[in-house]
Image (tube, rainbow, N blue to C red; front, side, top):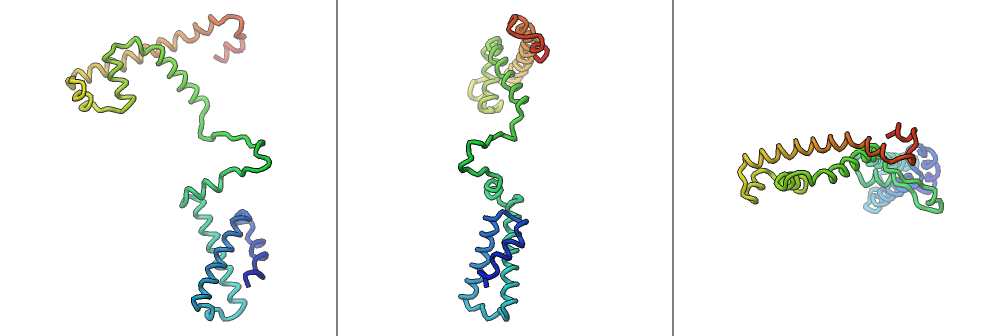
Length: 195
């Protein structure tokens, strides 16, 4: 019965899943029915039509399960479904990170570069507090225990460090157009407008 109905069922439900997935669902449905028949449940199927209907019902059940998995119940299956195939035309595949926001990444890199240029203007205590926050997210209590500071000193140094760093970053941003104007004729007028 499974061999006789295979092509018809795959053709009828081809709009629901990819061909490989449909074949997998059909194989699962067939195995379920064979297992039930081996356990002695084959007598429940009265006619060939009834058996064909049960096969189609199991097949549709596996299809719905697979589609639910693709919609989020199974992150691994969803990742496999959206994965690119590797093959003879693998060189033609252009992989783009859809999560990346290029302009945001560029701005963050510019901020990081500016930060590296101005951080040496902070006091040693200010750098210590900011680096402990940035690197390990160390809380005030942990920091004070480790370095022997009072909570009030930590609060004041932290507040002043953030304010000073903000001032330095703003001054760095203001000097950016002046630095670009010193580049000379290699930067065209249209390029300066873009900057």
